Length: 306
Image (cartoon, rainbow, N blue to C red; front, side, top):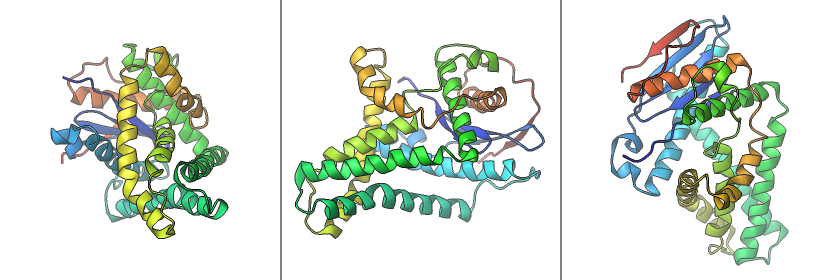
């Protein structure tokens, strides 16, 4: 059986973790307790053989991660900002938010750079035009990450992001899953979404290069159509490097992504680490992986048997 890579993301006052069969979100409620949500994973990327085909799995994982991530984020907001335990995790609002966020991201990081490059260098074409467009896109991306890092709420999310990375690093190193042990590990990780997005920005320069239509609408349309292609290649690149991370030349390739994570992670406190560990343990248990006894904190479990 191929090696499986566990992962997740930070949410408001908590962490979401994803495994082979299930996902779990652990959020620190206003009363100090950790509220835990679990549900099975049913998308083709997890249940069908064709869902794991190269390049197909990249597009499927990206789409599924967007859906799971936005739903987890909305649910965490309900828990973090309310004393109510009966919170809703799904619904039209969640998918409307996913669609809106996706449109904004596509417009900001794909369409706007295309228009800006056409305006700034109207005669540039081919690789030159794509490089200019890619530089603008990368600049917007870095500016966005730098800017949101000044927001107090986002800084806390970045702390939970660091907790997620530390917990995954500790698990992959075979260390005990407790806060004092996990705290010793790095806040950087080779499979981070920040590194993935940087890889997307770079690969897009190459993939978009042959499609340098003079017609702006055709150029914009080509960028949208090619997003799944770029995402598929970027995902395979991350899997390739993750499997060879100990090789020096691979470390060179992933170094920019690891450096960029300094903008999106912060050193977590013990309560953040507890949330990340609480989210990972049930995911491992669902995959039949034995872990030590649960954290010595009170958990409010909300299980979904879908």
